[in-house]
Amino acid sequence: MRNKHKLTVLAVAMASAGLLQMAVVAPAAAQTPSLTDLQKQIQALEQQIESLQQQVNNAQSSADNLQKMGGPINKDHPGFWKIPGTDTWMTLAGHIKLDAMYDRKQSVGPQTDFSAIPMIGAPGSDRTGNVQANAKQSYLYLETHTPTPYGDLEAHFATDFYLSTQGNPNISNSYAMRLRNAYGVLGEWTFGQDWSAFQDTAAGPNALDFNGPAGQVFIRQPQLRWTHAVKGKEGVVDQYIVSVENPSGDFFAPAGLYNGNSTNIDQDGQTADPAGCTLGRVTPCQNGPSQLAKFPDLIGRWEHDAAFGHVSFQALARKISVDTGSIGVPPDQVVKTDKWGFGIGASAVINMNQVEPTLGNDQVFFSLQGGPGIGRYLQDLLFNGAILNDNTHQLDLMSSLGGFIAYEHFWPGDQWETNLIYGYEKTNLKDVDQLIADGAQLTKRSQSVHLNLIWHPVPNTTFGIETSLGKREVGGFIPPGQQDHGYMERFQFTGVYSF
Image 1: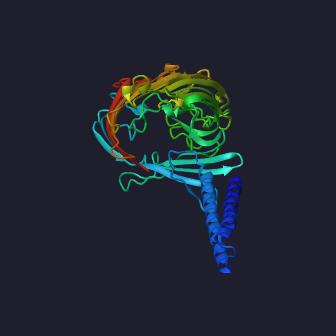
Image 2: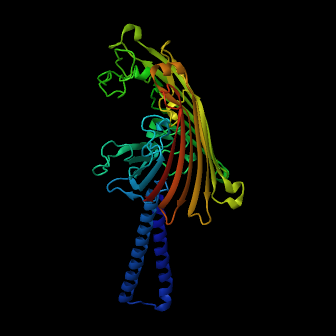
Image 3: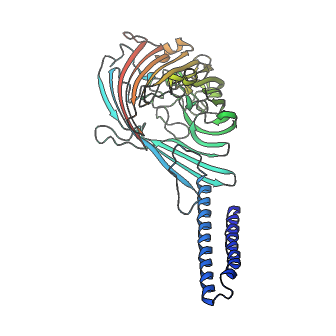
């Protein structure tokens, strides 16, 4: 309490000076002051001392509050309040979002899932025109800060209602919450569920559609992350990140083989892949699933922020494993194999006013990533990390490449903005003959275009319209009468209020 001692000494010094002044002046006023006059002077001095002490107490209280309120380091939501009886400060934020969509060609659900675009000629692909609206992307965010001997302990929790299966539009459109983010930060360490370190969230384009462009990295998962920041001159910051993250094997097996069984229960008593053996051409079906993870995913990243904008480079190593075990599996069909997959990526945000000052707040967003076995880290390639060879029972990695480029333009006054986004992804499929034999097909190429106009009429409020186009191409089994590609076309209105 060094400040408190300084303030108390100041009060005593001021009071002493007052006494000394009175002692010098009093004799000049009267040689023998009356007892009443002395009592009045003492009372006046006591009042001065009491007033000074009150000022000291108020100053110390303000200093203590500033010190405690200095704990929260996230200034995006400055409305923190202290939880009674604790040293923890908390804030609550989020947004309410309405999405209304019209699909002129091929409805693919409440988001533009390019991996779900049906092929031309497929059953139902001739249906056109569909209107749907939802508020499931409404979002709630909680953040706390607690001082500790090791620094500020942060806690972050976020949820929405997006993928809930509880509820339907026929009754009340009631949906249950789902977990998005739940993690803590202490010093340089982050622990819990957050966006993967392989995903550069700073380089995400501003699309109204929840899914965003094809080719992007989009994944949240449990992790333990170390982040070391080095600050330079003029706001330059370099961050070095290493993350150990939750793995998941994403191989494609012959028509669901090695992924489930007829009772849809795996060896641990959990629900397995619903399509487990309904399409399998080898019986009896294997007791699985066999997508065991034997090593965590490893990610390293370096990012640099300066006046020009932001740039990031990231690398990924992951082990995809297959292990059927021997429970219910014929001896000649036991499979135990694994293979390492890799991925690298680069992303950037360029502030265009550094190129041409008249461009104001315009920005360019860019991202490109790929590699053998990158699989589920590309949003629309959830099961394309590898294929289990039907003959060798070994994993063949599939090389994938994805990325996007976007331009964000602010119109005069910055109340209106327009975003043009192009996304692309491609996978080199392995053993297409096997896919044909299994009657299966996988996405080999997707493309997307988003164009929107967004209005910010008042703070924390956004309205916008957007059109999005998508094309999907597949490889493998193409049934008679179908083509190897399909299209979608969507128009969307969005309203958001953030709090």
